[in-house]
Amino acid sequence: MCELLGMSANVPTDICFSFTGFLHRGGGTGPHRDGWGIAFYEAGGYRDFRDPHPSVRSPIARLICDYPIKSHIVISHIRQANVGEVRLANTHPFTREMWGQTWCYAHNGQLEGWASLPLSFYRPVGDTDSEHAFCWLMGELRRHFPEPPPQDEREALWRQLHRLCERLRGLGVFNLLLADGDYLYTYCSTKLAHITRRAPFGKAELSDAELTVNFAEHTTPDDIVSVVATEPLTSNEEWVRMQPGELLVWRQGKILARYAAA
Amino acid sequence: MCELLGMSANVPTDICFSFTGFLHRGGGTGPHRDGWGIAFYEAGGYRDFRDPHPSVRSPIARLICDYPIKSHIVISHIRQANVGEVRLANTHPFTREMWGQTWCYAHNGQLEGWASLPLSFYRPVGDTDSEHAFCWLMGELRRHFPEPPPQDEREALWRQLHRLCERLRGLGVFNLLLADGDYLYTYCSTKLAHITRRAPFGKAELSDAELTVNFAEHTTPDDIVSVVATEPLTSNEEWVRMQPGELLVWRQGKILARYAAA
Image 1 (cartoon, rainbow over the protein chains, first blue to last red):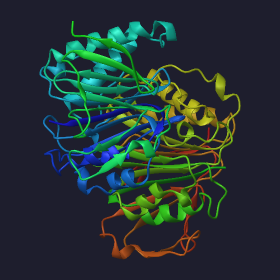
Image 2: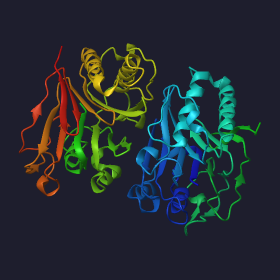
Image 3: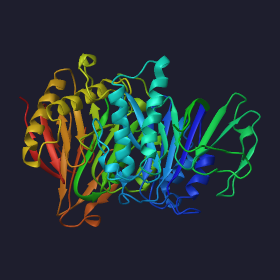
């Protein structure tokens, strides 16, 4: 099983604390040794860092911890390969451009019968079930919405996304983090938990590494920062577990919409 | 003016030596302070590192120098902004997926009337002339070749690419590095020079930094490594300057095809 980590915040925020715990699962406390990646949406752009080597030993992962990149959306993934060999082309997150936006995707789980999902605009570069499902998902969204829906019709897009996720859940396990630069979408098939931190900020202790942070020292009273992960990352806070079939739409740290299993 | 650096090699090769000289031009010996990026095609994958800050002070650029990534194609770019503000979305190289391949693009120069180049499959995320021209170029290629041409009809694709480059040269200055994972394409509008190193390997001295390398110590007799740059990077070797309107197609360090100005 792979591990997912996502963040949505209303101010540019670094993910160093959560990422430190998360990457210990990449060959440290967890069995996820087959590569890792992290994507940042920063003011005016997107970039990702991917490495097909275990995250605990990766110099690029250490750089991410030491060189805080402030971002309002983050998607990260640690891989334990099941479909597709261990190589860079199979390392999440995957990206495609649609409507002049960079869409970023990471998947946890395993699908059956995925190879027959029909592709249109987008084709996989690697050979994982995950990237094939991503290309199908994006192709279906683009087919339904050749142009981006106006702001007040966004819910039609989100409902369509939920339907597509439900269809993928029918093929196996499909826990998803997806983002387009404005919104973070999290969909739970079996395992995803989230927490929203806002004033008054307190201390948090990592479960996977000996590290405590006092968020009060790093935030302003208006900050809202939400973190989503396969398993709760801290031992002294209350995380909310998502329900199977549930899609959450996040913006600036807040849940904008929720779609329950059909 | 921005600076371009490309590599094509028949064995996975690190670009640390050339990149060290190149990144000194990013706020060091050169005026190109508005961001930089480097893209690697490695066995089975693609990744890029981009930073909207000057390359000489970038911790990510230092990582690239210290952590040799072995690759058979590299494209790098240092930016001096003219069209589009300094931000991550405007930082080269740009990428799009076509036919299940990651295409990577970096441009040096400035175009006029670029905003009226019609777009189809691909749309820019940032607001530079460069990315608009890239989206137009890729859209035109895809329109002519909805499916990838078979290996023995690749020349039709290259001729079409040359025609499109010539059209862009008609709009201003268009020096180009483009790659699809198999081939590196270099097109000269005003300034591009290249060198091919093969046995017997000798020493090379950087023009922009005090560094000499003895390639004989880092290579095997069968290695063929070609480097393409806006200006020659070494002071003791003979670089070949490309002609205006010339397109070169590289694979595994060698020139496969050459198209001269129409």
